[in-house]
Image (cartoon, rainbow, N blue to C red; front, top):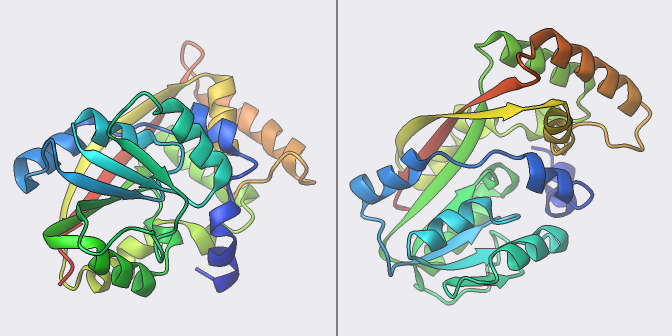
Length: 257
């Protein structure tokens, strides 16, 4: 990722927060089950959910009984999470970044990052995560990866490449392929993958598209053409008024050694 893209990352989604809240996928139950059964995640532990956004993954942690500090630098996204999770006594929200969480040293059992690690500086976040983790603490990095091996998935990927503004710079798959994760953990992390799906009507698909920071916004000169192309794509692939937006949810877990 370019330094310019990383610099803008904390504010990229500020004008897309409503679409993000309404259209981004949740995480499948297998993720939490694997963290419990294979890695000992349990009620009463403490967790920092870094880059917590609107709190999609944060809610899974609080529902599992963890004491969670959600760390999010984007004001608009953080306020959404604070509103949605206000009723949970196990939820605390702070304005911070992966490089400066504001947390005390050796204060958390878990650090989780859902759909955000690719925006971080790996060396800076590693130093900060090492500082705030308790001895024996673990890090879990989670992504919903769009599948390209279905007719709709392949067509949507072509559509994205046709209209995206800086897709090559910011796509999260690069950190899974270029050795960044091995360097971050210090060893090859454990990995698991889970199926995940959304069934989206036309409005849902449009919102899902607009929630991606690399797609043209409403004031962009290619926005109208993008919407027209997406509508054609939807009509070609919809069944009973919906398309299946399919993911492979990937989880990487390890200590920082």
